[in-house]
Image (cartoon, rainbow, N blue to C red; front, side, top):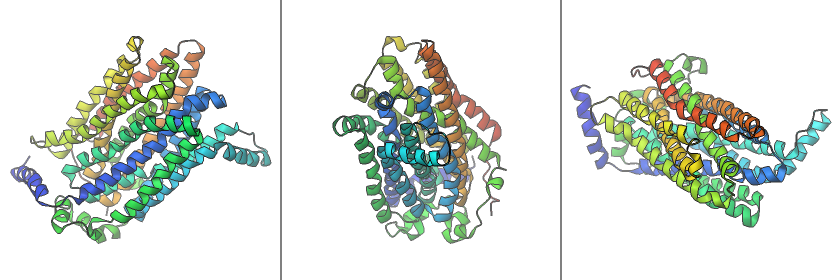
Amino acid sequence: MSANAKQGAGQAPQLASTVGKYRWTICALLFFATTINYLDRQVLSLLAPLLTKEFGWSNTDYANITAVFQFVYAISMLFAGRVIDRMGTKRAFVLAIVVWSIGAIAHAYAIGIGNAVNSVFTTLGLAAVPVSIVGFMVGRAVLAIGEAGNFPAAIKATAEYFPKRERSFATGIFNSGANVGAILAPLTVPLIAEYYGWQMAFIAVGAIGFVWMGIWIWLYDTPDRQKRLSAGELAYINSDSAPADADPAAAAAKPKASWFKLLGYRQTWAFAFGKFMTDGVWWFFLFWLPKYMSAQYGLTGPEMVVPLAVLYSMTMVGSIGGGWLPTWFIDRGHSVYHGRMRAMLTIALFPLVVLLAQPLGYLGFWIPVILIGIGASAHQAWSANLFTTVSDMFPKHSVGSVVGIGGMAGGLGGVLLTKLGGWLFDYYGALGKLETGYLIMFSICALAYLVAWLVMKALVPAHREITDLG
């Protein structure tokens, strides 16, 4: 690291302390959006034991419903990044949260939706799908289309409002909203369902998004147009930006790079592979843990509240701590990229404890809860850094598109893992050896991060910023 670079790194915290802090208000908005995102996403998994009993779903049926979300999310992520880069962060986020809130509420009307879809199928001479399954599939698809906008928009907003050295920390903070959502969901959803019915759980949680939307419209604008942002803070935000990125008008005038051009960079493939290997792990934990605890330990909805709240509370530590960890390496003389990769390698070791979740599960459900909690916490730490690798190396005007490509890869990885899980649990469940299915799945989850890190490092062994995208 050069003397000038070290001097700049040392001056950055001092400069940050002398300017305003409005960028952290934006970070708070992104945090709450992500919280709502995961609240809406998790309602189905928490009600899965109840809905499985009511509608007679098999593990494969449930896997198909969740796989629809992941598949549509994957495809939508690809387009969401482009839409966000073209529409701008403010308008795109409004569109995203309106769509996903409508999708969340639509689950409450799954039976009516299923009857309507089957009527169309019958008219067209197609085989009808069980009403409950097709109705929930439609709700999940609409939810996925909207939710696909959250992370590309949030990463783009972070790139707009934070200098590079703060981005992983800011990403870790807003990404911890996923954990807060995952904590709040088991504390609220089972109670709402018990007292007011499962339909009201979807409606009440889905409506929260419209409240956030009004606050976002009021408080957000691009930094150059943000009246609440001081000149000093704006200068600090742009302190390590390329001249074109610091000039919004110049960035807006740039033609958007095509997907094919973006796919020509190893940096894109490294990010996409990291997402493909690891996104499905988080979704597996999110969508299958309630069913695992019900099947393996006989826990009901209210009995899962405390274990799930503890598990997802652990993940908050991982998200924020993981976002801070690269700064620890950077402050000790490492470049941004090498600091990030060292942090990610350290993080990738923690999920290995998940290998012990099933072998030690006979000691009681708290053993797998704690071990899976460590693995899930590591995922959030990993995710905070993985997202930031995009804004480290790509110009701001293409961040949304690259995040969208990676999000599609992550969604497809999630579909494969979910379908594999559904098949394994039905297969080994029929043999009376359900625990073997979970052992296989937990092993995949434990090893995914090390494999992802090795391939990412092989693709991009050293930092190289993209400067030829127009």
